[in-house]
Image 1 (cartoon, rainbow, N blue to C red):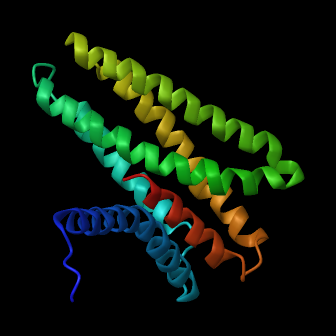
Image 2 (cartoon, rainbow, N blue to C red):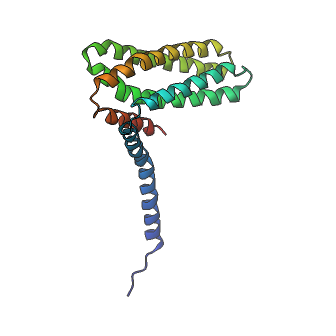
Image 3 (cartoon, one colour):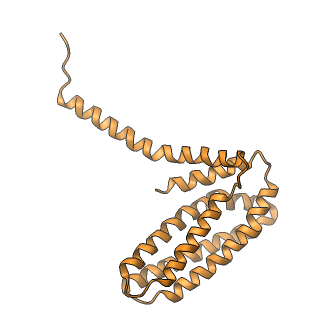
Length: 189
């Protein structure tokens, strides 16, 4: 006699499938991103290309923020959230992958502390911006301050930090670093 699966069995299978889907959707993107990042460098790409592209996107959002009228709370909120999300992904990759490598070199300990401190300053300015959106205040001064800080930070990374790391790291290590950067960014959905 064949065993009939009751509705409890179907629910369990459905829940199992949903759980597998959730786990896969959270674990698969970082794995794919790591492979893509590594492959990009093995194909001759810049190991820091993703971070440099982030810099351009962040600077573009900041330009839009500076142009946003005070009375456009929805637009300002949307731009703020876009910036905050992009900065969070970007900062996580730098703080968890790049800055520890910088810190690992004897002369890089002060540089890594300085970079971490700048990220903390950015987060303080983001907090100020959020409060200004909520209160309807003019945010132009805070946006300008954040833009200036990020512009200096980007220049230091792109002109000094990234080129130094590219020269210092063994060629076989660069794909791994690029994969780690991509993986860290993919962890923030």
